[in-house]
Length: 360
Ligand code: F6P
Image 1 (tube, rainbow, N blue to C red):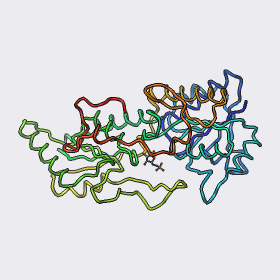
Image 2: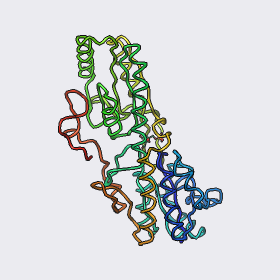
Image 3: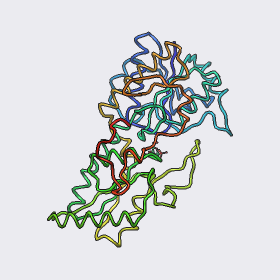
Image 4: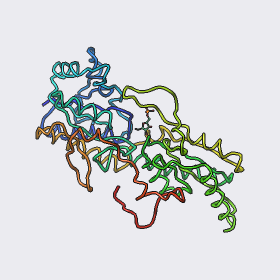
């Protein structure tokens, strides 16, 4: 068999290990793997010779440990309403002799895979996004690495914040889902965690910070700082999310970013020293953690198994801590957001600690 593999959407740690997993399993069966560069773009353009590379078992070790995507990514949408390139995708597969595709990506890449499957393209999927918000799967590649970066960065920033008694805003990614802020902030012992799922009031935020500072003084701390982990999609009640610019990508998404700076501006006259850092792409740029390497490898191996069984139109995911096959159209359902009642303390603007579910 000839299997094409592509990585679409934003890069995330775990993509290369997933490609390595695909090659590992395919070579056990004597199948050929073609790496398709820049996501769906490789199959959407006619002159695509420079977009295709054969991947033999020699890549496994290197890919297995690297962050980013050696195959590169793009947000190309092959089934855009105003530019449907399904026929070109099918013609390119024929030209390259590709029997099946493994698409590795998030809601957009796998959503496109789902539409292509409905048009007869033999495709299976692997879930990836640091946001961990895909419908149907408890895990997506990149989440664990991003969480670890947040944790380590919070620790570094704490040294500076402690030295200057700062009220520090640490902005993290996640788009409309607060998982990275909630679980990163929890591990960092953040004083406040702001998530998109719970619009907050600035007065409430100030009140909490004043109380926390007062308490620390009463307890005799001499180096007082407060850390607020804020999700890029968090917003004040009645206000919109803060956008980075006005551009939309091919899937119609705008870019978020800057809320930490915005909040710092609103609070800087009430507190002596306020600062802001956005972790942005540092969260995606790290080498994959053990979990993202292992999950990528497992996802890659099982994607090939699905192809071998003729299970097209599915993606491999995790449910109740088990690897399972999930129908691709499920990915188009509403994203998996933080259940505020279950996991978030609206009074303290922080993670709930008492007797909450561990499974998300
Ligand atoms: O979906 C993953 C993600 O990293 C989000 O957390 C973030 O909002 C978005 O991608 C950034 O996208 P881009 O790479 O297009 O700036």
